[in-house]
Every structure is written in C-alpha cells, then in structure tokens.
Length: 213
Image 1 (cartoon, rainbow, N blue to C red):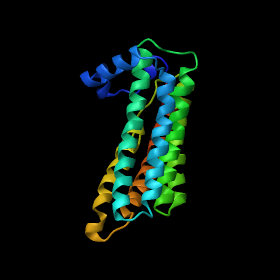
Image 2: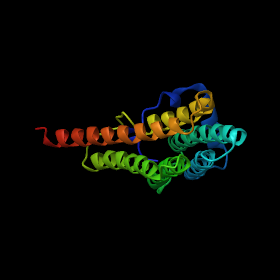
Image 3: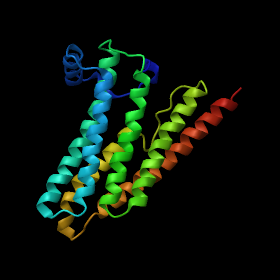
C-alpha cells in the first residue's frame, strides 16, 4: 500500500467495526498483500456466480446471484482492509504498491467478463472491464504527472461494485415480469458508459492541471 495521500477516501474506514476488524487482522499473521490477493479470489467467485447464473435453473440462479452479490462486497472489504492493515497496522511492504493496484484490475475483469458471458453479451462484459481498467490507468497517469490522485466518478470502483451488486440482487425479481438477464445487461452498459465518462473527466482534469500556470 502507498502513502495516505494515495488512498481512496472511504467513510467506512472510520467506522468502529472496520477499525475493530482491521486491528484483529493486524494482530494476526496476515499480510496486507495476502488480503489484496484474496480480493482476486473473491472476484473470481463473483464472476463465476454471474456467469453460471445466466443459464441456471430458477433455484440455482437465486443462490448464484446471491453468492455473486456477496462476493462482490467481500472483494470491496478486502480492498478496505488491505490498506487499513498496511497503514494503520504498520504492515507496509516494499511491494505493497504493486499488490494494491494489480489485483484490483484483475478483479474488475473477472467480475465484468463473467457477467458478460453469463448474459450472453461477452463484448459488453469485456467493454465494461476494459473501461474500468482505463479509469485506473488514467488515475495513475495523473499521479505519474505529479498531480493529486483523482478518484472522481461517476464510475469509480465503489460505484461499479455497487451497480453490479444491485443488479445481481434486482435480477432475483426478474421472474415477476418474465425477464431474464436484462437487469445485468443494463448494469454492464451503465458501467461501461459511466467508466467512459469517468476516463474523459479524469483525463480532462489532468490536461487542465498541467496547463495551469
């Protein structure tokens, strides 16, 4: 994990439950890098659940969608606690910056590509994944130019995870209107489009800042 200035501002970081869990993890023989790696496992399970739910029968589909929503949120919890254990727990490692960033990009791809194949729209899944990675690239490009880290949306990581989690849960009600996967298709489209807006917004902020006298 990097310096405090490079951390995403999260209200949950200051909650009592998060600090309590972080203290327990810090006291255990668990490293921030291991938590970061675990986020990829959570994302793989979420992506697999979304993929398999696309062709599952009604009962299995409910279980798979609930599991996918759960593992998406567990992915975010891993993202929260790796930083807290590193910074607040004093367990920063020399290779921490790599493990802070790389698993996040893999996790985005696993979830959105899995969802894309599940709804029989792989191109849409890959588009959402690709633009999600591009948002992070643009953020890091700005930091590489010596600018403050830009976590602006509208489809930053927490927004993407909220969207796909909500879509998985709303999809549970699709039998009520005889739908099938339309909610997830819409969510992937929103994520891809929102990520494009985010990329252009962050890119414009970089150019504006670099041109400022």
